[in-house]
Image 1 (tube, rainbow, N blue to C red):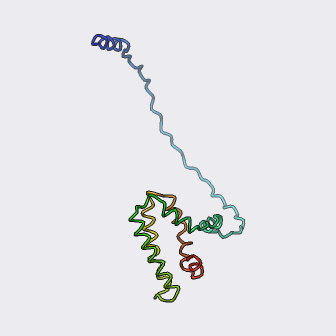
Image 2: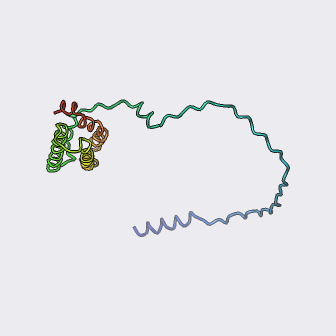
Image 3: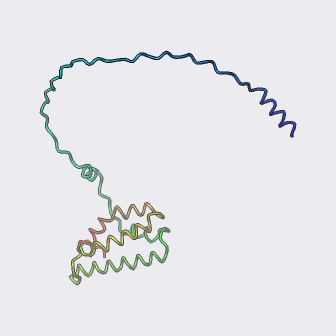
Length: 168
């Protein structure tokens, strides 16, 4: 084995030779080029034709107009929340209790028993949605996107007494 390694090394050493690189020819230095300034007459600006300016629509408004309104399936959303494995059992129970408390407060507001109106419950609603999104964002991103996209539609149902009573 040792002889084979030495033979291989000798063979490799005999195959390579060092060749001197050919000399590079010397390049003569170029004379500096001097450009003399010339007198140039200024051009007259071209006449600009009057145009009509159309007001641009905001990009956001164009996108919203092109996108169809998503349908909100409360029963499907509820079932997806119950069946997802991204939320543990105790977390699901805690979130359910918080949702039930919020729904009870909304119901009281619609019946005139609460102070401040339904809009006072917007912040607790937003905080609850953020909690749900935080729990779902890593474990079930499609469900998190669905809830995030339905956020305003769900609040529209909660804030409207007719839609809320039809839901319950």
